[in-house]
Image 1 (cartoon, rainbow, N blue to C red):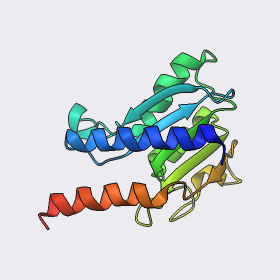
Image 2 (tube, one colour):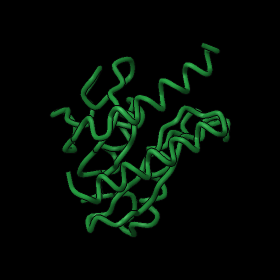
Image 3 (cartoon, helix red, strand yellow):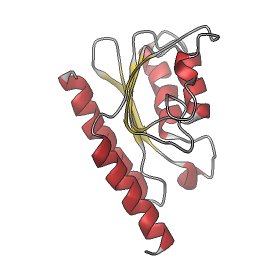
Length: 154
């Protein structure tokens, strides 16, 4: 794992913790450009915005596309996210042409990057991303477990 990816995951974890502060599921995402520099970052904002599509990945990809300067194509970019992306986010990854996805915790109930589905590597689609799973997975999972434990009042 490159130092840029480890640092990006650390930042994604910080963003995830911030999302928890405003009542959102603690998920953070960072998009690295082809040179390894940060293009964009975001946390879940579904509750904050009242928007079901305001997942950390989608928000970060939108901003990265704007910053990247090559239109909507994020060729050569890496998405670093604390939780395995869902089908909506996996679709956005494919459509934005992200080169690599790095995620922390697996999502066996809704994961679309290897757990339940594998949208980003589906050979029927016109783009496939490289995937690295399990980066700082325990830290990501710990945030999520604590969030859901608090929500359930346990």
